[in-house]
Image 1 (cartoon, rainbow, N blue to C red):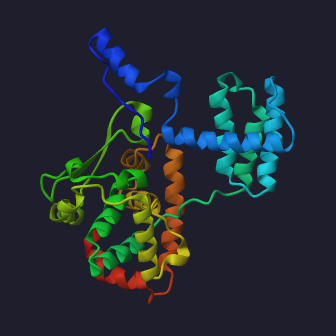
Image 2 (image 1 turned 180 degrees about the vertical axis):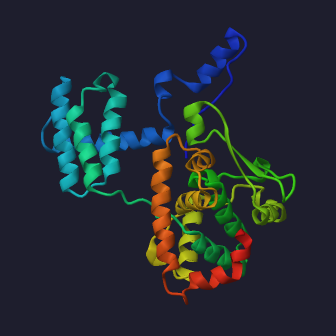
Image 3 (image 1 turned 60 degrees about the vertical axis):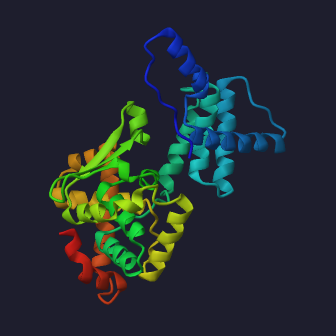
Length: 314
């Protein structure tokens, strides 16, 4: 995944010239490299639509708005994802900044899409399911995987953050004091222009970190490895049909934080969200999912592992 280049402003004109030369032009730094690739892909699909239908990009903003509205209807009818539609509008505005504020119809259609089709988000992982997965990882000797599950859940880490954690980023004075993970320039940190970190008090996780920091000499997983191990674990403990994904750790962790502290503000701070709305959405879905699992089959693998390993999370 591409990263935004960051630097401290040089003390002299010569230093600033050299650093900025390495960074490139400002217009090439307006969005992250990964986002730019998405934008380019969406724009190319839009241009292909124009070519197929023998159309050209209009010069007038209101005509462009009408054409983009037709394209969104095309995406809707052909089964494309809403993310593709959003990337298209954002990509056009990135290429033509003067069009911002002049695509009212297109953004209205996108909002209507959002209202009428619930996004396929990663379902929140209930704590009882986390216990089952960690138990399986210990039984199989996959300690690094089990540790990553606990880190992602307790620290409310995004998947990209979890995949990049190293031992040098973890600060642990003792098992009875808060553990701190320095995350550097994360998604939210880039917006605010400041590095981020997470902290929490968990004796069980602190002891696990202290005992297993040697496995964090490098990043835990590549994204494909993490996804493969995650799927394998879900299948083994009988949770595959619930469609959990690595990002489910962050969403489920938010639910646990709220259940424990009863404070939405604390969840927002721990999860580093910019708005309460996102955290509230995660918590509501997580509470519903937790209720489903508690009322499920008492002989399920989830309940069995919960009985054996519940003391880790008390």
